[in-house]
Image (cartoon, rainbow, N blue to C red; front, side):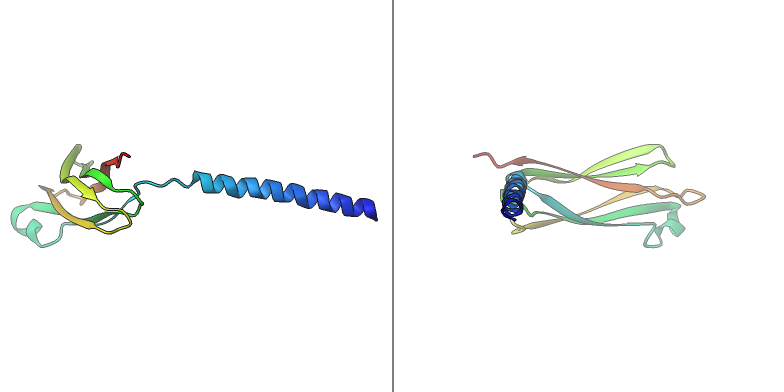
Length: 138
């Protein structure tokens, strides 16, 4: 009986050491710093303009903010329109040189638009967001 208790105690000690190391590793992996978040809405062909001029627009409205615990310096946001029907990629810089305060204390909104001739059949323009920044240096 004593032998089983010793094995149980040793097993529990090993489990505690392994789990303790695992949780300590998780705590070390959590880095502080900048964490950029954004919310973007895009619409294509809205507003009836395509009926009048043979053109359509892709409109993008977005918001960007920093959820991290350090300030993001010199933030640049670029909207990338990929128009595969026209074999064209258009980059529009919508935010440049903004500093975003930590913990979501500041949000910056942006709007941009891409115009193109109508396609038949109608094709979609893909929209991507690229965000670049510099970490706060200490």
